[in-house]
Length: 288
Image (cartoon, rainbow, N blue to C red; front, side, top):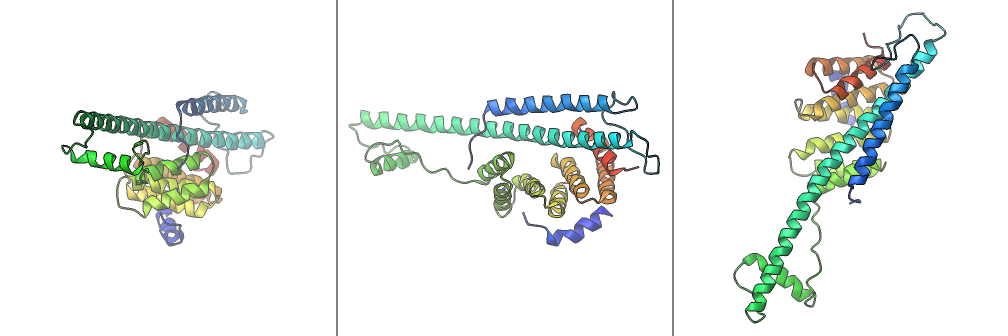
């Protein structure tokens, strides 16, 4: 069973990755890449021999003899289609991550605006009382102390605290620019911190970073650990797909089929993108 295999590998796995802020223009660019890849998928499907262009994926190849002249072309088409599907899944995940990052940045801006308004109000109150600091809100003492330290400038911003949320955001940004070692480091930092919901995302990021470094055995275990941490979370289907992809990269088609069987039994009605990827992987692995 795939569970036994991954449980045996788990002790060998690498344990549970500040970068530029993502802009809406980058999100639009990713969406355009997804549309381009979907068009390429459509062209690939139309190019498959045997009149199968109208389906999502080319039909699986029979395992027996049957080596017709078009066999190699169909197999190549299936591999290329699966690669494009992998890229689409990655880009869609990046879009979701960027949306979350933009929401976080919006909240940070709102908090900074509120803090600035409070500081201005405190300064006005102090000026109205002859320039002496106001004793009323205790929270205003920190900005006043900062102003005195800076010689009255009051423009120096306090250093940004490296919270697990910020570390995880930086790790995802590193993953998107291909800095897999940086993404792995950020994921491990979050995993080493206090327990919380972010640890599931950090574990998934760790698995992605290991796969990016072609450490497929470790990434298979890391993906399965993501599933194990929260078998009913939104990450669980993607984690099982990650297990499958890592096993296929190792050439273990039989175990990959077992992982797909678990995905089908646990999530009989997955999201369309998960179903599409599952079908592609079944074709690559030759699952029955």
